[in-house]
Image (cartoon, rainbow, N blue to C red; front, side, top):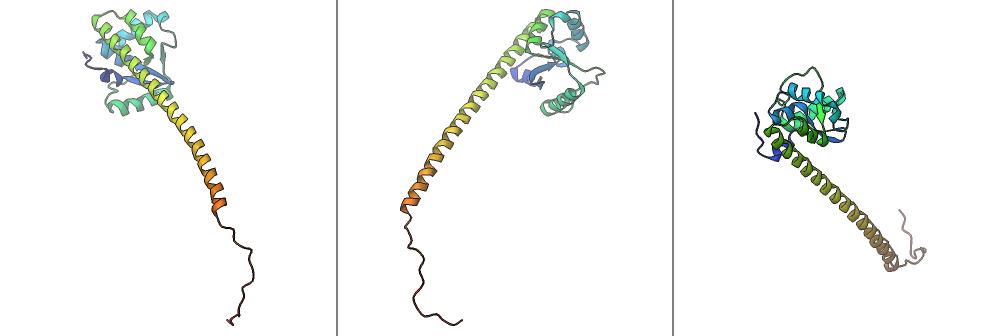
Length: 177
């Protein structure tokens, strides 16, 4: 049984599939202290509570992407057991809905921690987006400013550069070469 010590532990169980942050059924089962098989049974018994934007099964390409993310975040041994079926993936809303299906004290505490982690990740994404917009705006203003500076420098260069007299023939003796 795994007890949650920090949000960092939960963050390791959150992956990105279909541009959504999701959690695996096996990771959730481990956090809740139940067998994956039992978690899936409860979900199947209450399938009306889990529309496709709350929970979905990944296809083979997504499964490869998921394995890659797991190896990167948690090391190659995290995918502990072979599975004959593709895992169920739960979005933030799906995880919240799990609290109505699993009613143990541990499930309630874990759900609260998971939801807080999702909220924290969402705020980081929002800050990142805001920072990115500010950098883009700064870049646009800087480019405009440099364009003005270079245009003015070109006009000053034309005004300051001395006008050379037209080319005339040299006066003097030619040497034989």
